[in-house]
Image (cartoon, rainbow, N blue to C red; front, side, top):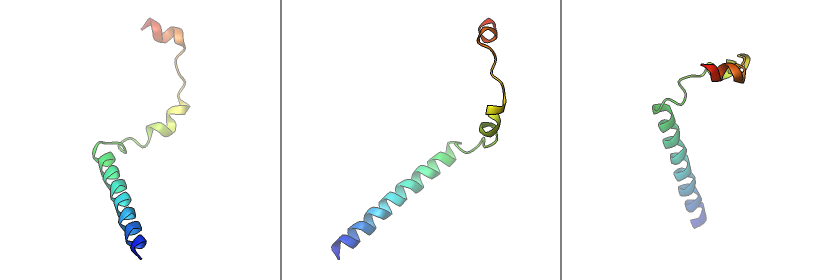
Length: 54
């Protein structure tokens, strides 16, 4: 019976850790730009010689 209490406490600690990390990510702006990554692959990169001349 003691192991159940230990496992419940451990799972609550892990869940709390995930909640804290999620809130930290939201507050630091990790989810601000959700459009650009999905279309970034559609843009062509400049050739290497053009980017060095600028």
